[in-house]
Image: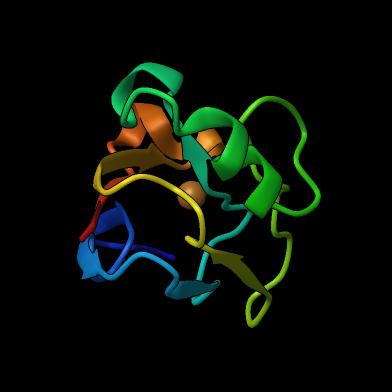
Length: 104
Ligand SMILES: [Cu+2]
């Protein structure tokens, strides 16, 4: 999770993982950042399991705001169907801070 002269982004923005893997995001610069999934951009039937794997949510599929550099957010992709999961940073969506996770 980066915000610098090149913009706001997840690096890498695209990840391919296996069902059951976990991902840990780390704030590098210019927080707050978070991880939020669009309910209509995840595989059908995935929402409940995905939500259950997210800690500290502020709402449906909306991860907590990470306020400090070095803070991390970890979530499991256990029990979610394979497919494409598009996500974004709530504070920086307008700046194009988006990512894609493919679960195999
Ligand atoms: Cu952000």
